[in-house]
Length: 340
Ligand SMILES: [Zn+2]
Image (cartoon, rainbow, N blue to C red; front, side, top):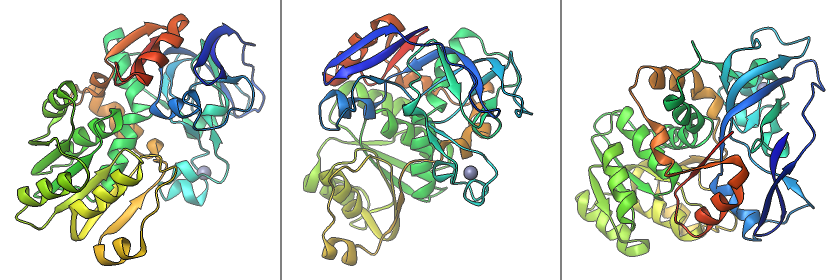
């Protein structure tokens, strides 16, 4: 099969990779309908995260089941399925509590590499959710978004206790931040403040449900949120960037007693003790348990209630994955969909 492999920072090639096979009886093999490039794929691309030799890339996926192992009971060949970037058994105590991204048997799908024609999915019964019917081609991007960015933005909103009557501030206008806006709208927020400096992303945020745009960042951004909330701060803040500045901006934009849901990959953020102590905010976040929300999200997509695939603003064939990385690295694209 063909698949994207990163050889060094800035060097992604689509090349022949071995066809995946069933290794464990709980595995399934899927034929990808589409895959995509994640903001986190840019960390090794930019040399910020070390690469351990040539590495197959990709952890977002949806597609048709080709084959299942002997122990798989609920997933069948021919089904259209979506899974998350962590494979999870769905049965351990942590999974049953809704934290599948910390499953005691979890496998990171990035170690498998789903920017490819086929992929092996471990723990298929726990990991995969099948749709009621095979979706039409125009619905595939929405399902693909449900594999990561939708569930991640949604988890941030849930962690930030978004709900009716609340004011929500969203720090970050990347794909996850934009999905946080969508989630806040669906969860009934009264006011949604999107913090964005880019005109095209502001437009998309408004389209997805934002009511206010704040273009300032850092302390100036915090000040604008305070002005919009009678000096109190937002009830709920979604942090979807992962830098020191964004994390502090999120905590400082939140009112005492409020909640910050953080899902940006915080590589080197350091929160000062006094910032933390004096904030009086709840902090909850981490790698999102996307699997928790998948059944609900696939229903909302099937009903036409949400269109999370709007975050894909560049579509390329898998063979041109390298161009997709370049476009995202240069911020010419929010998120690249690769057709398979
Ligand atoms: Zn588990």
